[in-house]
Length: 366
Image 1 (cartoon, one colour):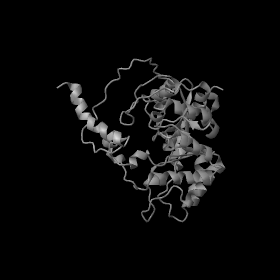
Image 2 (cartoon, rainbow, N blue to C red):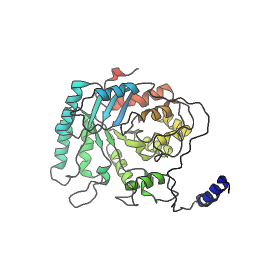
Image 3 (cartoon, one colour):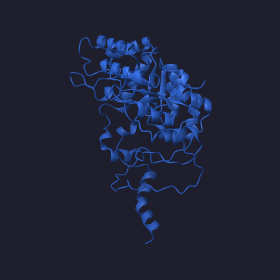
Image 4 (cartoon, one colour):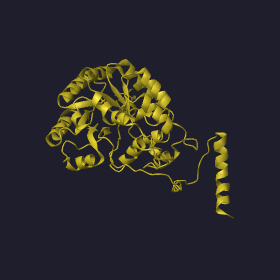
């Protein structure tokens, strides 16, 4: 029997279920299906950003002792002006990081501090944490990073999940506003991680290949609950600037993200790990960048120089139908947004210079 006919007979039941909108328990192994595109269109790979940029979402765990020469060479090659290391940890470790940076490359790195929520039940936790923020800022911290684990995995002395809008943390958010430093906060994960693992789950392949990422509907709480908790603190602390990591996990609903930005003027967003969401909706993404060009920052998350060119290509070119670098994240193809220069400048560095204190603006064009 002809191969195409066999393939049709195999896939027809799947298509039928998909058209009906009913989930299908997929037992077949589809991971190997990854055909090269036969589409012939202009290609313009970009290995170096058009303008110097600030990566507001990176993690460098050993910056307290590391020789930074190699890292700076990689940054120079891709035109990264400043890297923001969100993993400062705080206290003496953060002081060692900023001291090491100042000795080697004082203008190329900014370090954010972190706090410990696990001891929140201790009577002096709030006062001591506020003191730590003050100490860290005095030692060069440029912001505070909140990890997703702090609103999902961290528990109090009774084993209860610590909600990120716990009122005992309010003085910390307020202190950040008083000191003029932003809070970059990562809450939850993609919504699909909480949804049933079936043929209607858009991230089925990722959850099949990375099963530990799958969550039940209320593990450790519903997605909507965790997201609402972070929005609650944004509303309660209008004098504090918050950078919502990963487009706040609303990259697939930019209209709703826009409504949230309209409602909360102290909220900014960054694009770390979600360029694939933008790259599959070029018209909607262009609308979003045009309207909210003053509120979006460049971020990458996991540092890998080989992956930045996909960001540059999506943001800078008009290329069509090119691959994302992690197939399990995005089985779809990317389209370039061809953003205007002024929007690119705001995304790449102007917005970060506006809200992160102490960055060297002389590294960037007007």
